[in-house]
Length: 191
Length: 373
Image (cartoon, rainbow over all chains, first blue to last red; front, side, top):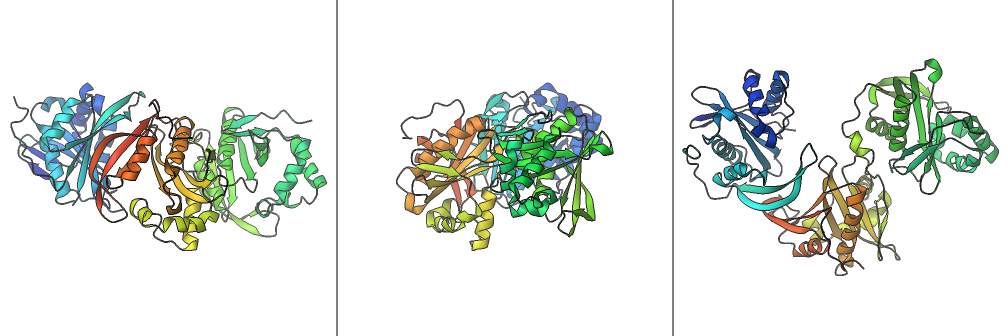
């Protein structure tokens, strides 16, 4: 299996690069935040498991994912995480997921990060289709999808089962390499 | 006359102590060349009297079991824990499966049940499993049951045939984590035969290779659901056997036959089975000579009706290319609702990236009636 080479992406106010363990404390604070954990249960409970989570994110050697920490380009502080996962370099498809640190919400981090990763996935990686699934009950995620030009393709009934056994309807959004470009308003969400 | 041997249940199997009435079944088992190859005690059986003595020796054991089909009582194998004299906390597990019952997960289920009994009831600390390196089937059973490979023992195994075999030693400790997928896989079906008015569905075997080649040699099937690239006799035999081997728990694949004439009519498969998410996908093929008769609808209906309860599924998905409207009709008739249209989502056998319909049926969905006789 061929790995994916590490890359850094500049996205205006934000900088994307593979996670590092020195940001484990901020990663822990982001992941145990109830709003993050509600939609992204990461099984991270302390500094050690957060560091392990960072290491997993930085290991792109399987070729199945490329996970980025999103940083404030000025301060260098962690503001979020975006992951291209389920990468299939034969079928040229993948999925994308994202989460924003509680101290950085409302500043358009997620749309900027998803847009940057999407551009890289279609450009340098050569993918043709990226899916963005999210639970219908999470409309904030739906707005990110819409801003980034991921069309809603279907509503999947009870598609996702969470750790408590509760099943959730999901939206399946997707963007194609050939889709018309979108413009992420840098002020989006700032109001 | 039997020792007080615990009765163990294991997914359609019953493990019970031996009794004198088992002699005829043991004589049958001992006639199988594979059983004779790997068991010196089986090789010594030449008559019903020999078999009776073999059984009598085991009636006294509390840790040797006859493995039976729970439904019919038919003897399908044997299993035991041995060597406890070396120390109360250690044992070695040994087993064999009757000809005709192999590749159905009998060994894996029996080993799982006896392993659990050994650790939980007998309080064993370590169970080892030793098999000839040449016996690859046992290696898969060992690994699947969480027995960690520890090493190759050179010329260590004497099966009584004058050859000393290199052996693999596997072992499992009471403290080992259960195989991560074992908990959900143990109860996954490893074999099933399903029937409807016109159809018989069963897992394929390598002997289905000839009919399978004719089925696959069709433009529609090559385009929408192709088989393997290599269509040589040998490759198709291997492929069919693999399609009929459900032991990794990820799929349940059936070949569909005319119940009366026995002809191959198509295939249906439940695949990408995800026990944690309780979901799976379905796919199918209809032979060119069987189209237009509602075969796919009937077979998919039988499969879905069986799969939801048998695998405790909540959601089953069906993807088809928008350019293949026949599949859309089958999906709707079998109760798979259209949930979305995925753009350029899959490269089909024609090499083109196609838009697809995603259909899904939930366990609680009302299913259209009348599509199945």
